[in-house]
Structures are given as C-alpha cells and as structure tokens.
Amino acid sequence: MTFRPPTTKQQRRRSRQGSARRSLYYSIAFGAVTVASVALLAGVLLGNYYADHWAPVSSVNGVAISKDDVRNRASVNAARYQRQIDNFMIMRNQGSITADEYSSLASSLTSKQDATSLYDEALSQLQGDLVLQQYADKNGIRISDADVDAQIEEDATLDEMRHVKVIGVDARPTPPASSPTQAEINEAKTQAEAYLTELKQGKDWQEIYNESTADGTIGSEGYNIGDLGMVTRESLNLDPGLVDIVFAMQAEGEYSAVYDSEDGIFRIVTVTKIMPVYKDTGWVDAVGRKASGDAYRSAARAEAVRAAVRDAIEAKYITGATTARHVKEIAVSPGFGGAGTEYKLKIMVFAPNHDTNAAATLASDDPAWDDAKKRADDAYAELQAGGLDEFATLAKDTAKNDEPYFAESGGDVPWISGDIIYDFGQGGTTLNMPALRAAVSDEELEPGLLEPLLEPSMGYVLAYFQGARPSPATRVATMQLQFSLGTLTFESAVAKYSEAADAHKGGDMGWVTRYMLPAEMEQAVFNTPVGGIAPTVQTSAGYWIFKVVAEEIRTPDAAEQARLKLSVWKAWVAEQTDAANIWTDQSALTAITPATIE
Image (cartoon, helix red, strand yellow):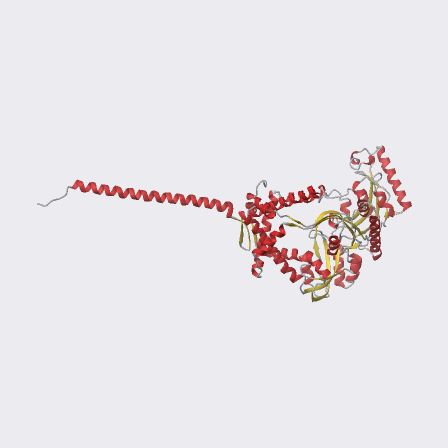
C-alpha cells in the first residue's frame, strides 16, 4: 500500500508560504512608496530651495546670476556703506569734519541703503562684473589671492578728502552773437582776477560768490561752481589741471590763481578742510559681521578684476599709440521751447501789492495796479537815464523787482522760444506773458528797452530785448546746406554760430582718439573722410558738427592723457556692456527685494 501525506497539511504549508510572500511584497511595496514619498518630498524641497536661492535673476552672455548672488552682493554693499558712515561719524566726533560735512557725506550713503536701491545696484554690479570677467578670461588677465588681499586693503582705506569751494566767471557773448569775442574773454578774466584780489584782502567768499553768479547763468551744479563739499580726487569733476592744483594746496583757506578751464569759465578754488587718508583697521571684521566673508571676498575679487582690466584698457588707449584725428567743432545748444525763433531777454516784474501770484485775481481797478505801473515807469526812466548796464543791479533789488526768479538771476533769461514766453494755451512750461511775446515777435523790433507791458496774470513787465535768432535746428540745417553749396566755410560758421567754449579758437578741439567722445560723436568723427565735414549729431545736449582736419598714429601728450583719463574707461565699459547679451527677470528681482534692510 502506498503512503500519501494528508492533503490538508500540504494546503496549510502553502498557505503559510503564500502569506509570508505577500507580507514581503507588501513590505517592499510600502518601502518603495516610502522611498518615493521621501524622494518626492526631497525633490519638492530641493525645487523650492532652487527657486528661492539658485534660480537665475539675470544672465550675461549665457552665464547666470542667481538670487543668492544678488542677496549676497546687496548684503556686502549694505555692510560697506554702514561702515563708511560709522567712520564718518568717528571723524565728526573727533572734530576732523564738521557736522554739516558729516551730514552731507552720510546722507549720500544712507540713500544707497534703501532696499530697492541696494538690490538694483547689486544686480547691476554683478552684470558688470561678468562682462569684465569674460573680457579678462579672453585676454589672459588673471587675479591672484594676493591681488584680492590688496583690494580689500584698498577698500579699508578712505581716500584723502578736501572741502572745495569754487568761484567762476565766464565770458558772455553780446546777443545775438553765439560766442564771446576775445575782448569779452579778456574782460571775464580781468573780473576773475579782481575777485581773487578781494578774496586775498579778506572779503567773504560767499559775498564774492553771490556777485559772480548774479546773472544766474552760472553757479548751478552743472557748472561745478559753488560749495562742492567734501570730495576725493576721483570724485572732483573739474579739469585735471585744476584737480591737481586743489590737491597740491598745503593749507586750508588757500586760494588758487585764476584758472582758465576748458569749458570757458575762469575759476578760483579754495580748500576749507583737508582730511588725510584714513585707514580702517576694523574694516574686514565690521563688514564680516553683516555679510558673508566669502561674499565679500568674491566682491573684492570682482573689484580687483575691474582694476586690472582698467589698467590694460588705459594702457592701450591713453598711454599707448593709437589712431587720432585732429578735429574742429561747432556746437549749438538745444534751446528752450519749441522750434520757432529764439529771443534773448532780461526781465523785471512789478506786481500789484508786490505779489505776482495774487495779481490774476485782483480787480483791474484796484489802486495797487496804479502803484505797480508807477514803479515800472520809474524803473524804465532810471534805466534810460543810467544805461542798460544797470539792468542787473536794478533787477536784483527785491524792493523793486517782485519776481524772485528774475531777481536772483539779475533779470537774465537764456535764449528762449516764443512758446516759452507764451504758448497761446497749448500747455507746457511758459512765462505766461502774451503781451511780451507779441512785442518781441515784431520782426522789425530793434534791440533795446521795451516800455512797461501789462501782463494781467502777474503785473507790469519791463523787458530788455537783446536780439532774436532762428531756432537751433534751423541754424544747423542752414549751415549744412551752405557747406554743401560751398557758400560758407567751416571757420566762418564757427565764428557765427558755435556756442562751444573753443569757438574763439576756431572750434579747434585738438586731437581726438577712441573713447574720448560719446559714441555717436565718435562714430561721426571716425566715419568722416579727412578734410570732410561730418553729418550733424543731435543729442539731448544739443547739436554738433565736426570737421576732420588730419589723422595720425600718435601717443597722446600729458594734457591729452589727463583728459582721456576722464572718459576712456567709462566709455569703454559702456560699449562692452551694450554689446553683451544681458537678460534680466525684473519680476524675480522685485520679488526677492525685502521691504527694508536691517
């Protein structure tokens, strides 16, 4: 008989084996799900981290700038600015600088600590860093750790600063002439020499300054006249020769000789405070407490690259031999107002009750109008008897002239279009003087003093009409047409039309090299055949016409190198930046910019 194991036992064993197998499968599946979940979570976390930190905000020629790059640079800049402010505070507390000087120095740095400004500046810096690093890589310019250390040492050093004040006198052409004669230039220099004599005799600087700017056409920041505050050699925007004079002065309160600046203004400078070089031994620690050390070192490396590239570019275009062109120029200012005829005027206003703002609502039969008319008539008679040279003196007398702007400027108004005098309700900036516009629009009107004119919106206007001329665009177009017809020489046009400071020298700019002029002007100069006249270049600053006299391969002389030092690097960097492929995600930059900086 054959033995057979019980069937039921075999079924139990298989059941137990199947159950174990299923448990194993479940465990494996659960483990896989767990691993997948963890991986998914890690992926989400990594993705979020990437989006918050590594995602690009910008790129330069395909090289990305991450969000953290911007944050790190902004924190470095904030730390630097705060440390500089702290240093200025120490100097104030020690009496090295005055409270006003501290306030001026600190305020400019404080404004940079605004979060939006910091982040915008940080991104702009990083973009510029990449442009220069890519140039350095292509041209074999390398930076060592020692170079970075030297740059950090330089960062920790505050350059010598001086408190500079400037008085200027410029030669004024007699309207309708566009440029001063040699006699008028000599007169301006003589006046500057007289001011210098008075200063040395003890007359107050502010009093002389007020006299020198009485007609309002100089004295604005754009002319670098007045109290320029505490400045470094690098930041002082004056002729290189005058900068040398300023930083060669040995004593506070010293005055320079009269200096004939390239812009045609005769300047006198004085230094009222000299603050020597200051080395901050705690600089690195102070910056490191507020910003990552690695981030600061990265920023310092970028600065060292910038310095090395700048040295290479300046060696090539400033101290090296390059193609240069001898150029003459005609410059015409853009004017004020519309495209019509321009007028040159001096103006005073005699308002009822001495209030130009209330005149429009004052009844026409109010006795104050009669008083204003009488004062205007008296001034008219005084000028007729004493001569128009007294107009500025009379206009500055606020007991007589009721318009503060004209009183401050000595009545002087730059060349303006008819629309600026009165625009017939078209809107925009206007003096709102319809009677004056009607008077000067008379083509037969000769220069001279006009009888008082009633302007109901402000009072009685007394105007000295000095001349009229076509609009800037018309004058430039006329010149180019006459050049092409051969009926006008360039030299004659300079004498008649140019408003440049070199007009009295025949418009001679000297030798022009690459990166000396703005890009559009440089293109006009170097694309014009030698002996030819370039097409008109128009910018927001006016119109230029250039004549190319000659071309040579030459090394700039010392004076030319000093001038090139002011323009070459900035122009070269702008050209490189314009040529780069730069992408920016402005919305991403805005999103990571905090509301405030701690």
